[in-house]
Image (cartoon, rainbow, N blue to C red; front, top):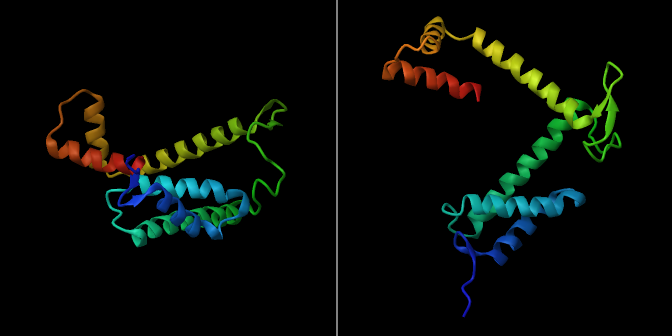
Amino acid sequence: MKAKRKVGGLTIEAAYAIAKRACRTTRDFDYDDMVQECVLEMLKHRSKITGKAKAYGYCKMRVRQYWDSINRGIKDRGVTWRELGIQSLNVEVQDGEGNTTELANLIADSYELQRSVEIVTFLKGLPGKVKRIAQRKLDGVRLTNIEKSMLAEYAKQIY
């Protein structure tokens, strides 16, 4: 007899049934993707899933994140990509200088610029002691365990 594959304490079939029920509120064209993401979420947390209710909770959390990202996108941009008629990020567009480039490259460049501005702003706001510790590390001076942990604590905030 063939052993059934399991997600936590559930079979794969039960996990898909729970994911399908939890994803009913998503938009039609995102439904299948969301079901897959919910099953992956359950697989990621399979050691914590003890029953159907817990699995359903993980799926609903993922659906809530989905709707939050949709709503945040509408608030930030005013419209969604689909409303603008853009189906792919590989579309050729003209940048501000008249050069043609892919839309994905423009978005990536703007994200990198925004991220670097955030990092510089964050670094300027660091306490003087942390800046001195970072400079000592750059100079090759051996740091104490306390200095290493302090530097690591602030480094977590960057990433």
